[in-house]
Image (cartoon, rainbow, N blue to C red; front, side, top):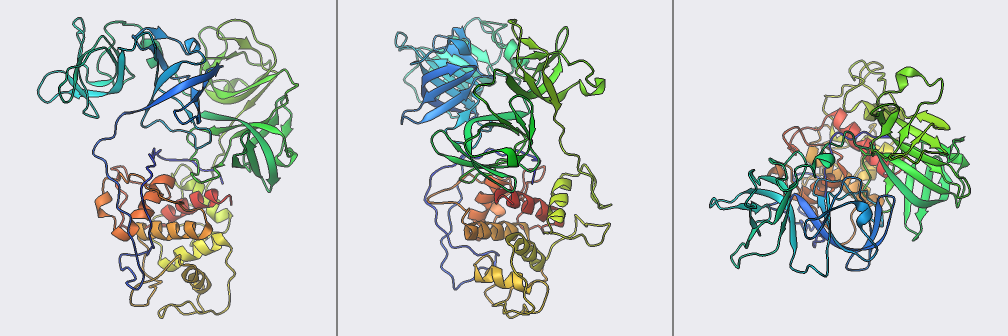
Length: 563
């Protein structure tokens, strides 16, 4: 199932001790031993994360590095500002094998959940054995409370602007310095400062033009590229891959455009074991953070080492002069003769080409051009607007038989769901067999209702535990935190829940209102986004879950399970 994401939450996983036996409602079963994981809190979230790496290779804007443990890390340099430790401006091409580099990623920059990891840093600083005195800080700075200088978001450095600097240092900056005081926190006169992006309140006074080019990137590529994997197996539009190190991943290829590198159209069934593939996922497409990872690509290209042509998948907009330039600014295309005029502007394309000019950027007339159109969701229900945030999910879950409308014309997206209805939908997802009569295990839940088989299954597998008085209360509405807990229990039952010691920061604005029993379920929800926060950042744990919200959650869960 293909999903659109409404908001992106970046999760920093921290290895902390956490074990728990789970209940699903605030009325916890007192007969069960429960160890509740303490919710992780943090007062300050730095604007940038720093890594120290060593360069292995640098090719076509991608730098391969190793970390201090010898692990491989790839860097996509298309957005990076690159400097030497003394503040000299460089390009990505100046970074050489063996260089020791400091890399700074924005904390809100998503990292593809693959191994080896690939990051898109904001800043790369090349260190030097000849300049051991030089230092650099990349952070969000604000006015120091005592009025002297500007303090970084971690509170461990106060900087003072260079003498000839006329602006403020409030915002995101690169600060180059060589000496600090012995105070706590230390203070440093800056040798040079560089403003970063639109968050900065000032330009770089030392080099007025040097960050202008980077800040004026017109467009961002709506696709993330994954390469270096080969096909292990294909079954029912699910393509299982392995990378060069044997790490698996899966592609849900039901809606993907699939081509040979020469432009020949394929289907998933045409992909064979051993085929080398490159795939492209929309940047707003949620990655299911399980191992192995599951992706829903927009495009899959089967590679051929003997074919001389190339492929580009990107958004194209009119270039200065003639033609259309891609998001990275690395290729200009001229439309093939007869290409439909109204499809030329501001669109996403697969570009197949075999020759380019030697200009910068190179130019080509494609051998073949494929317009990538996102599927248009046309709701069959009068009360589900085509552009509603849950429209695609409603279409998915009704087409798959998880949900039914309340009539042929109405889905009732804003109506609440009972606990029995929710467990029924979950049981349908799992393929539970329905019996004419069964023993549910709850005194208030008879064995001859439409939901009885599903409740019995959920109870038997510890997906639901009911209340301490032995009831399930099938006709009560399910709250959002109850839904999170039941989904978490189901993931554990299916073997796709967290493993070992784990925890993440629960940063919902109303996190303090989440019941203790649901702490782990809330952390799991932060990672996967089954239930979304509102416009004020609240998760609303006690609020009744609506049919639209559960449809969205089930669609995410089904994608996670490859269904």
